[in-house]
Length: 125
Image (tube, rainbow, N blue to C red; front, side, top):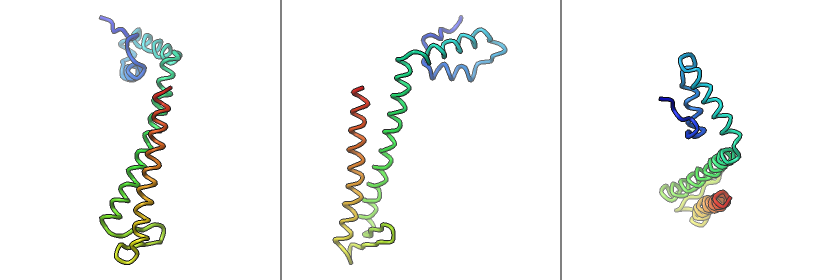
């Protein structure tokens, strides 16, 4: 029984193309290549590929959010804020320490807001 490659997604077709034995199944390989060409030229599929790329780029912002919030919590736990040679300890410089914590949380929050706005734009497209 021949597989119906027209029902496969582009990712599945590319996977089949890379794993199919071209010597044993030359006709199937030809069908897979034709379906890949059709799917790549389909505007709907091309739009999905672009959308997936945009989503991946936007999701990278979450790493920055995690980075800044990690440092905010780490600063609170250790009682020491450090940034490019500047150090503020909770015991010695309370205002500088809490300004540093607020800085980390604020940067994380700003990036998170940007992430949410870009996610909404992508969803509404």
